[in-house]
Length: 96
Image (cartoon, rainbow, N blue to C red; front, side, top):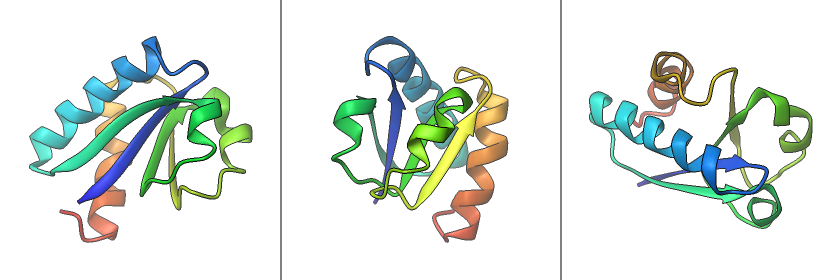
């Protein structure tokens, strides 16, 4: 099962909101995944198949080695943007 980590500065509000949007998109696509949210500090020591974060964190998260795939969003609550960026990644890796 693939693991997706949603990361924001404190790992509380925005990452949880984004997690719910990602889970809704995954459900629409029929993909099962373990989805968690985390703070930037905690995520730096973790691993997942995909990291999802706001575009404003790109410079910091590009340095994280435990996440082979990184998806950056302009709007962390936009299901259409999440689907647009997540679906091709899932298809390319044979997860759907």
